Amino acid sequence: MSYSVYILKCVDQSLYVGYTNALEKRLKQHNNSKWGAHYTKIRRPVKLVYSEQFETLIEARRREQKIKGWRREKKLALIKK
Image 1: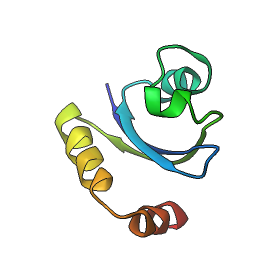
Image 2: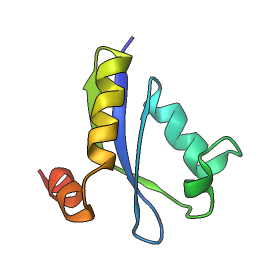
Image 3: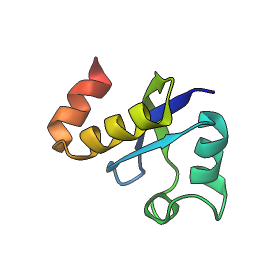
Image 4: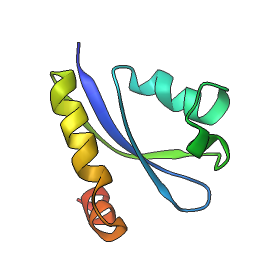
């Protein structure tokens, strides 16, 4: 099983960082389901703008936390890459 760390751009132009083992399903949840994160539920629609793959959950969670700690400008630079 692989894990994805992803960045979503919300309708208000804010960025959301998360991780999952089913990226397509999770994106649908963020946009359509009551199971999406509260942050994205009130900022729909959201668009996937970046993702990375990892082999282990630990790696994915570490990367997610690292990216979440970055300022917006650094996240945007990563997306642009």
